[in-house]
Structure formats: structure tokens, C-alpha cells
Image 1 (tube, helix red, strand yellow):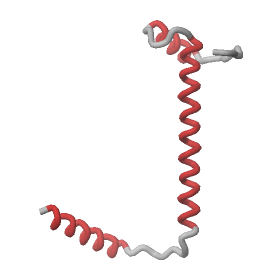
Image 2 (cartoon, rainbow, N blue to C red):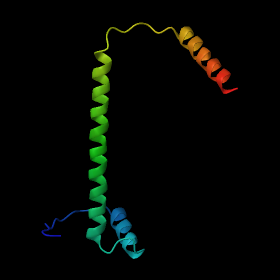
Image 3 (cartoon, rainbow, N blue to C red):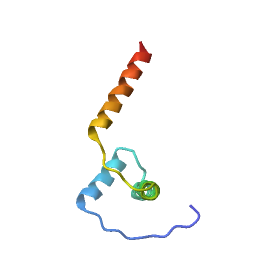
Length: 93
């Protein structure tokens, strides 16, 4: 690492014990390594959430921009689903 900044953090006893166990098991060489790995995972999760939120926003815009809604006819939906299933089963034979 070219440059580092030292920070002081407070952890619950459970987190501190988890870190010590990971080091004792040989999974990590140091506390700093555990924290850096955790921060990379946190950063990746945040980026994933940001992508998911943007996708939801896009889908919302697509849905609201697609025109007026109409009442659903559950019986018609089921009928069309049964027809599709029957057609698929007929082609599988």
C-alpha cells in the first residue's frame, strides 16, 4: 500500500472475537486485513444495491410511462396460461 490512514474503530465484543478467531484460524494475517476485506465486501454490496435501485427506478418509469392501467381479469389470465401450457406440452410430445 502506498499510503495508509490509521483510524480507530470501536467494535462489539462479538465482532472483536470473530476477528481474533479468523486470524487464529489462519484466514487472515492481521486485524487490518480482516477490516479491509470487510470494507471491500461492504463497498461491493453498496454498489450492488445502487444498481438494483436504479433498475427499480427504470422499471417504475417504464411502468408508469406505459399508459393507462386496466382491471385484470383473473379468469382470462388463467385461461391463457392453461392454453400456453397445453401448447407447450403438445410440442414436447
